[in-house]
Each structure stands twice: as C-alpha cells, then as structure tokens.
Image (cartoon, rainbow, N blue to C red; front, side):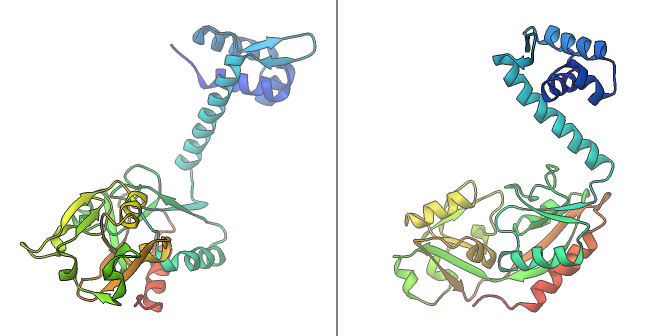
Length: 293
C-alpha cells in the first residue's frame, strides 16, 4: 500500500471547500490533479470515500472515518515540520508528577512576562526522563533517585535547580496523622506505595533490616488512591503535597529524611535556546521560597 500525504491533502481540501474547484485553488494544483489524488487514495484503500451529487460532495460513512484520521495525520506532519525547522516559539517542560509544586503558577506567570515570544507548555509524562527521551518535551523536571543512572546517558545534560522537603502521605484517619512531624522509623512497619519508574522514594531510604514493605503503583493517581484507601502510606517531595492535595489524605513532614534534589534535564547535543533562561528562573524561585514546614 502506498498512501501519499498529497492524497490525504486532496481529500481534506475537497471536503473543506465543498468540491474539486475550491480544493484545487487551495492546494495550488489543477482540478484534474485533485481528482487523480482522490482516485488514487480510494484505490489504495479499496473504499469509496466521497459521494458526489449534482449539488455537493460529501463523505461516505467510511469517508468520515478516513477524513478524521487524515486530519490528525496531516496535523502531526505539520507539527513535525514545525519542530524540525524551528519550534523555538515554545518551550515544553516535561514532568512525571508535579511540575515544580508551589512554584508552578509563579513560573508560568513570570515566564510569560519575561519571554512573551516563547510560549511555555507543561507536559505531564510518566517516564524516568519526564518525557524528554520520548520526544514529548524540550526540557524536563526530574526527581527520581535513579536520576544518576538516567543522567549517565550521554544524550542528556542536567543541573540541580532546587531541593524539596520530603513528606509522608497517609489516610486522614491514620493514627500517624495526629502527629505534626514524623521520622523514617515511624514508617518502617507500614506498607509503602512506590512508583518504581518515576517516584521519588525507594526502600533504600531506610537502613537494611528496617525497611517497610512495598506495593508498586503505576503513577501518581494510583499512588493517591491506595493511600486514601488506607492500604499504604507514601513518601514524596513537597511538590506532590502542594499540587495533589486530596480529600482523605494528610501530609506530614519527615524530620530526618534527606531532601529531594530537583533537576532540570535537557538534550546535550541539541538544547532549546531558552534552556539557560529556564534554569535561571527555576533556581531563583527555589532560592526565594523556603521549603514547606
């Protein structure tokens, strides 16, 4: 099968302009070329896509489905071309769980004021690189304890932009919720919910012989669900607490747990031109605002 993009363009243009004449003008080709493009597409797919009457040209039932997919494909190709030849008028910041927590709103507002020519997009992507390796973003905020292994990949570069206090998350009716602060030893007999791909905590936070049992979850929504149900407790960075406050869940500061490094990650060989500015703004935000207590 050989379905060319120009065939899809012919289909979309015919429908959008109500016929072959308008489609030809839109595409800058002759009307017979549009007819040939549509005929080639119908031949390759083996179906009739348009129904012609004396007054109009309308999609058949299968034509409607093909048309919707053709629009998506052409849109994705346009996006690919835009990214390949620029894409510098936006900065996509990936993150797995909670962006930059309490700093998120200020980050967006200050960026818009300082860089009106570069639109900021926050992209949630549940992968160890926050979507960077998958091409979903231009830079990524990562907090995983396995970041050292990720950053050993020579494709990426990184810097620490801030530190975040660790908190314990538990069901609101958990006996531990009556206490203002907790220690790691208070949690060693509990079941700890962990996202092994993107979570900020592993059992290695506790010494051998004093580690809690573990239940694996797939993302932050699963993590919150098992904690709210009282089945598990969780340990996370303060950004999760500020961005995911939920009814039925209480957060308490861990007094003896090391802080979570917040890193910005980017492509070493092809950094976005705005990367340095993003590093500077994030570092300033983390310096100015003290950790939650």
